[in-house]
Structure formats: structure tokens, C-alpha cells
Length: 326
Image (cartoon, rainbow, N blue to C red; front, side):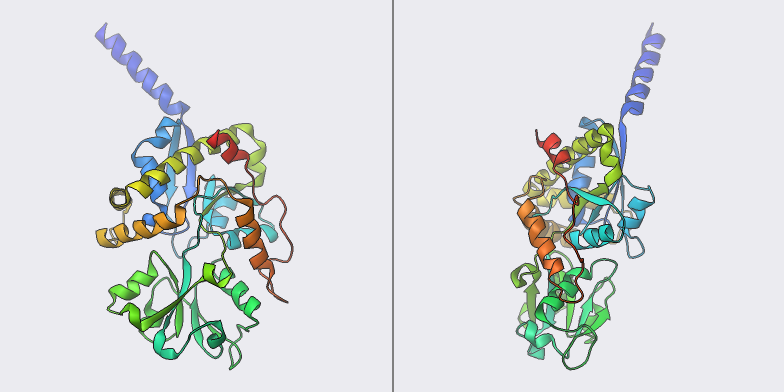
């Protein structure tokens, strides 16, 4: 009898395992506290509670999330809205189904001794800019300021910045792209005093664009089963994010457990999580339409060379978050 019961138990476990819906999420960058909510949801069993089997794919310098999504290797991706809307205009029908990040952490960090005090001082300077879709907020900002990105005395020379702070430290650039939660602190950790720097938050410059939204392919939203699966995924993910906000140090340690590269440090991840919590605060996962419109307005305000040329239609939906939150 014991053997029979044990066999039945194994059969039930196998059936339950088969019943779990698989979800693959493509991150925008490598494993770090920027994505803590998803790792917390995985580690704390929130996905399991929603009958989900979630795989998290780290990103990297050679990984373009829109391409991964288009190729069918992921069900959902994380992406900055400027990149996603640019991809949509070019023919990839991505749709924002949730927005865990309420605020932007993007900024420029400059040497104070250059005399730069505002955007008007960028002319004639060399500025490090990330590409692979991350360049759009900068290009939009410069267009709004009427500053050319073709170099010369009246424009800026754009240095294609790698994902490090070397161009600033080595004086190859007057300013570089940084995030409030990551590269800025790498500069500080390199021995630079905050008093030696001047920073420009994009949000404070009127170029507040949304970051780290959850996107899926539009056609998949026609499948009720997919929508239900994504609603459960978003609900569990937001539970993970709110736990991470309340327990930043513990969340950082969970992230470190999933960092297979071993490249991250405890100090940096705890500090990063503290800064990330400021960006996710105030979001329940549902995209605020006014935030979307603000982002679109910023991207359209590019003069003769805007990031997008028309106001997008169907680029976001509350279908998933309405189901997740209710």
C-alpha cells in the first residue's frame, strides 16, 4: 500500500509540474538588483503560487531584447519605452502590458571642472552615449535643445559608450551616460568625489521617459490563455517588487544568489537596490497613461529628426494589469 501511495504521490507531482505554465522573461541587462523583483518572485515562490514555471534570461551587451522577443525565445521582455516604441514604429508590434518602474534613473554625469552647468554648455563637448536602443532619450533631448549630434563647435561629439565609466575616468569624454543606481556609483567607487561632478537627471530636464516596462508581442494578446498567464506573471512579479522595496538588503542577496558570473558585489547590489526602490515606488504595475503620453511627447519633440515620427496606437494595454490587480 505504501508503494502504491508513493507512486500516486509521484504521479500527482508530475501532473502538477506539467500543469505549470511556462514563462520566459528576457532581461534588458545582466543579473543585478535592477531586476530584483523578478528574482524575488522566483526565490520566494510567488510564481509557483500562480502556477507558473518562470525562466529569467539575463541580458548583456550583445543581446537585444526586442530581437529575442521577435524570435520567439521569450514570452516577455523588459525594455525602455523609447527603444520599444522605436521598434514598434519599425514594424515589431510590441505592447507594454505593465510598468513596474514609475521613475527614470537615467542621467549624464560630467566633470565639474569642464565648466558645464547646463545643456547649453554641451556644445563643442564629447559626450558618452549608450546605444542598442538606449540612445533615444539622449537624441530626443539634444533635438529639443536644438543641439546637433554631428560634432563641431555648435554640436556635441557622441562617443559610443561601452557599458562602463572608463571614458569619463580617462578623460575621453566630458560627460557620460549613467544610471542613478549603477554607473554613477562606479565613478564614485573609482575614487572621484561627488564634488568633482555635476549631474543632469533626464527627468529634471523635461526628458522623462519610462524605463524597464514589460512588453509582449501584440498577436499573443489575442489568446485569452496567454493574457491569463501574463496576468499571473505580473501579479507575482509586482508582489516580488513590493517585497524588494521593503527588504532591499535581503532582495540584493537574492539577486547575488542568481548571479552566475560572480561579477557583482554585495555592497554594490545593496546600494543599487536602495536606489531602484526609489524608481519602483508608487507603481502597482499598471502603466499610467499620462506617463506614457509624456514619454511620447518627449520622443516626438525631435524637430526634423524625432525618435518616432507619429503618435503610436495600440502600444500599451491595461488588459493584463486589470486582470492581475482585480
